[in-house]
Length: 169
Image 1 (tube, rainbow, N blue to C red):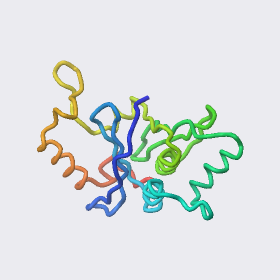
Image 2: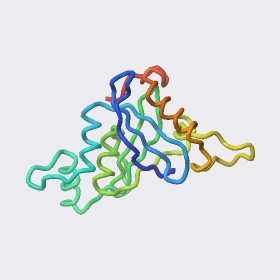
Image 3: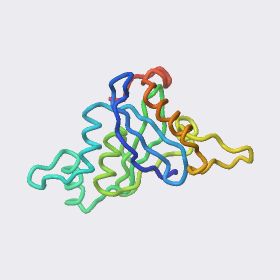
Image 4: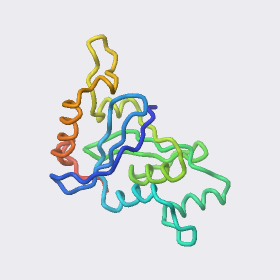
């Protein structure tokens, strides 16, 4: 599994749809996952302090798990089919299917790792192409122009560009 880091949530200027950006912790590839406005809110609110007297749903889930002596082990991103990503939340070694936005929101709240399969990164990851020697390029090897082109790419794409799928619910 490939460790991913939260990068940002931005709104695609083309589709006015939130895009969750995750990047490899030890590499240059990124995943762009279309999510709903509610999903974007859940992910972004994970970066803020929660109100202990009035917990949000994701905070409540974590409290309920803690009261049962459990914690989230990891969030796994496992595949993509027609533009819809598959994710799982792993609790005590048991995987539970989830939306990517929920898996990431929970992982960010509790500090659990966000992991993706190599197959998913090969299929949906965007980043530098391997060098002629077969080794991936280092982030420092990317020019400002390449980074600017990647940002422009993210600003210009829409959900239909990926396997004809709609944004993930």
